[in-house]
Image (cartoon, rainbow, N blue to C red):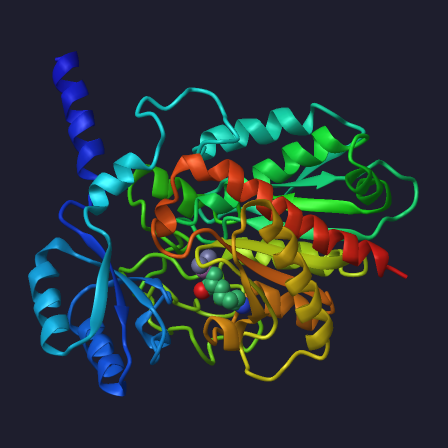
Length: 416
Ligand code: DDK
Ligand code: ZN
Ligand code: ZN
């Protein structure tokens, strides 16, 4: 009986996991308007998961379009691409194998590791232990709960001070499947703690400023990518009237909300939500930043993939009031990053550099008055995409540290 029950549970657990057998990730290179039309039509007729850009509406001429194609439509899509002369290559031939290969060793360790993609449970206990490890440098506070009721814990790094300090706010894991992002926030916290008192820049940064780090923004989604569907992007909120789950937490901010590069359809991966801040996770973070508006001098948000360092605006092609200063900082940060392993980043305003996309956190923070506002799109450029191997966590985090520290140093220098 007990055995039967156990088998029953295992079967239920297995049935709940999305597999990707026979699925490929393709890179299409549309060079004519007809190609763009064909790709959009295809997206209307079959279920395609857009990896980059992140939805069909964002497809334009002369950009690479990375898509995940369900096994069932593989032949059909290949035939269509050949007939219409759309240049393409196979980025990932066997997605299920790639998902399984992503972890270095199959038996995942029970403990937290900075060079692994940690499950939410592991990140959560890491948050608890690291925040009590060094009370003079790190503290934590809960800024609210996620839709599914998980606590959103914000870490505050910085030497305790009696007077109010200026601060930098950084979040990771807005999008669930971009696993390298939470890995970076964890790395950053570790590095900050272990280099304080040794590295003069880190010491001076934490003496003079506080750095708020939100290790996983979209916890429900992140947990879902570990347990059920590796390719999930959105939150996990539900609403009566639609069977589709979640909204895009990087289209849900009150910045040109849902005017461009976002979808009002609840089933889309770039669904903007029912109203600005309809997603409780977005509201919690927005409330925190609003409350601490006078202290917060910089906002940094970490995504993947594409190797970009973006700044406002994404909701309009208009240049930000501080465009040239932000461009200069982004280029300096990219150059610093590149010095370590030669990784090339492109920097520029979101709309012109990647695609127009309204309702993003960086635009919102900037319009609120946080002048130094940046979005990172970390490694790679599509070889592995969201399935960046664990062996790349360390080099990716090391090089990204240099860019983030460059921005922090600039902000610190220009405080008063
Ligand atoms: O949210 C997106 O689609 C990407 C990261 Se996956 C960033 C888009 C540019 C910054 C949005 N303001
Ligand atoms: Zn993202
Ligand atoms: Zn991305």
